[in-house]
Length: 348
Image (cartoon, rainbow, N blue to C red; front, side, top):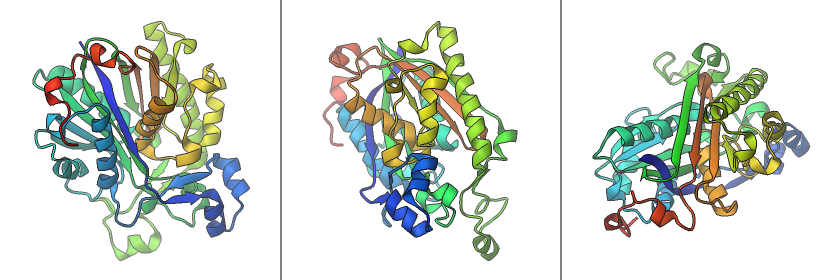
């Protein structure tokens, strides 16, 4: 028995901010943005949309994809660094509106690694709990509310969005290996949002200084990301005696288009093995991997049993990787007996 992904969904707000429009606001050229980031556009949440709204839309699509009722969900884990409010957990609002009344909701904050942290927790809780059958794992971010649109080196990178997956116990395929870690000492120097927490509570001083905006040390982050991804990739494959050529798809978090262009050569992969959508959606932090996975599931013709590797590094010096065999495909129903027909077809 193992745990696998049996449903995916994503949501991108309809409002699009192109690099042409952003360049005009910043008084720079679109070419500068493309040269630095490779991002042509990003989606921006509307004034009435918060992280929970994006998470709900992605969750409904994930549940619909496997015809599962919200009442069947035992666990909701929401990865976000831009939750609706400090207290309570944004996952509680998702549970309420989704009417997943039988679930345990909780939030996880690990920046771009957040979804993989949530995935590992969800996998482990399902394996350890005989009475739990389904977990809804979500990444949702409204980073546009926390970036300074006068800081050209930061604001050009980020967009808003949400992605979700449904986990359940399976007999074939599923998650093979998960690795998580962090270097909090080094990660503290990479940046963050200093204002608004218990160390620097919101005040007129923090507002005036722009302490509620995301700040990043881009050069230090870029080098650390490359070094960490290289080590993480081979640390995942070697214990399983797998080669890079055996990966059907590597789905990384989407930090920067130019950075991703370098990874196939860095990791010994073909270009078509590394899934990239940052050029159309920007960096959506913890939502990057589930959004990319949902899109890959729709346009890459993933087959049951194929190897997929998730890779991420994030805020606080966190990192994560998950290796799995895909549980969906032409024989998905017979190959995932964890899906209970009694729970299918409910209102989502």
